[in-house]
Length: 189
Image (cartoon, rainbow, N blue to C red; front, side, top):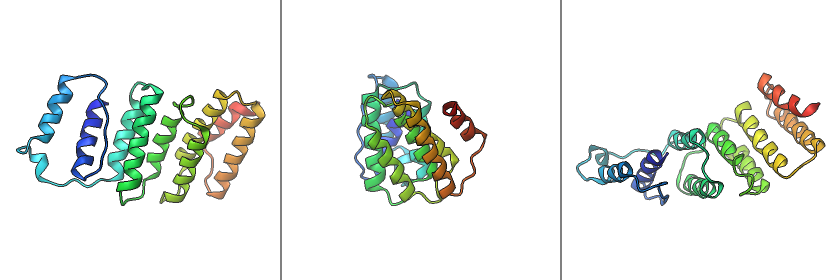
């Protein structure tokens, strides 16, 4: 993960975007990578690389795939990535970026508030084109249910939330698949 974030940091800095993170250790390989990336003779420094949704998606997917970070560190990294995305990029984020964000938010139930998750969801609905898919809706639902579980919500609260999500599916004209039905069945008994 440190290598991915180092390259991401280099790319953002090439575009004048501030992004700071501290590698998890003083790894010699990371130091060598930073030296190599900043070398003026490096052929990578002769071209400009556009900031695309794919780059943000790769970083977020690496974070999802990585062993869980401590919640505070994960929250700080996500705030930096979201700020870079919101303040400095001219493209609209793709729905899979939000699916990864929802998965990561589901890991931070003790650090962030459920209103942060709801705000991210509204952000997705207003910014995404094309519209969100079942993947993003399910990732949001799983994260929201993790928050409800953490706060000791009653089963009826979880069922009410899932019913609101089914209304959202109808509004967005998305047919729930077996994965969504499985998620719902966990709370309908």
